[in-house]
Length: 564
Ligand code: NOJ
Image (cartoon, rainbow, N blue to C red; front, top):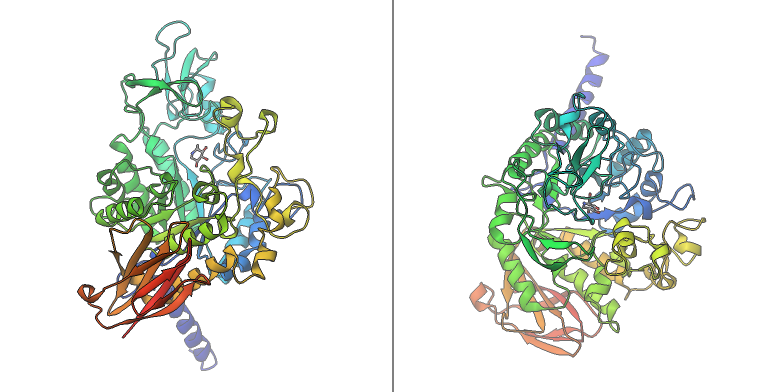
């Protein structure tokens, strides 16, 4: 080899090695993977940032906000579906799994977003709609064309019980029968959600292979993981047994029933393991849209050998609508006991925003700060929802004619739909909260004038300032990153407090979940911390400690290090 090339080769070798090291350096001394240290942030792409001012957000918009996300303390964004789609369920009806809807941009925009994300240390998580496609997907168009079509068996087709009678009593969760008659072949097809969202037949190996390959394709292109949509409903009882009836009717006016034969069938867990195997090829993470009834179920999602989903969402916090330390303690203890890595979520695009759910109408900002300080200091990975860091509130439609979400249109007024929690991100006091110069697809609430990124960033006591402080602490404090969780003062019905400890270091968190001032005294000798004092790390203005006694203002936050 010529002498001239040797130094170049050496540089390339060193560069190559450090690149490999960077990719594999995802496990820390505690055996924690990258996603266990990451803060996740859900983006509803229609509503985050609109680069071309057409009233709907897009990928270039998201890319332009990478700096914001990084500064906030976000490590990974989960983007709700942005694949080509007729938008019947705003992207949860996919007509091509390996492309980007022109409304959101192009594959080149996606590549650019990934590259910018890398620069800002923000990974991209996509939303994989595994249970169903759009009825406009080429697979379904072929499937419905004839009983002998190549894709016929990619969906669930059955004869009716009799003339005008669907194959069984299953109800679509979005209203009406879960079966739609198709006159071309005189059979019904099954849809757990809308008729425009026919269920894929996961018992067909070709479907399974195609879907697994799709995840591989996106991993190669740069996604760092998937949130698996509606993964519990992948399989149906092959004999189509009727679901047991329950008393009453649901918000769509349909008879209540137990989803015994069309949700959580055991085959679901096999698919999770297979998806995980592919994810492991790329060190990717799988987040599950998995509602858990109990801890045994949660364990199944994690997989007996940890070979299921790394981050099944249990949604338990989203079910607690009041500030209840005993209930929160109970849930945390259960999740911790499951043996898997906890995932904490307080808001998403299907639930009323946490600002409204926990807020009492008078102290909502204080409560929003408290909730942020709470779930962002627990052991586990949090998934934030865009705008939560501002105290964004629901802006629910007042009239049926304004509703965009189909479940609100069919279920009005009992079911008003999910538009309220999907309104545009509030960036500034400019028109439409700085989201778009054109009227956005959903209106922003009047509170955008005070609750927006620009205004709140100037106020050290704003919701976003609390989020930033806590997130910064979470990224740098070893006890918060690696430490165990121990509930403290478990009889206290007002103050939620706990210890996060790691290798002799600890952080104490005390949160006043009541509207009156509270005091909490801590004796940590039996936790291995005798004669310590509390050194404040983050607190609300009137919360402080004297010795081991903490005084908390209403909804006050106090986070401190234990100093010897
Ligand atoms: C769950 C998603 O979160 C929801 O928004 C969607 O409507 C259904 N799955 C159907 O895909």
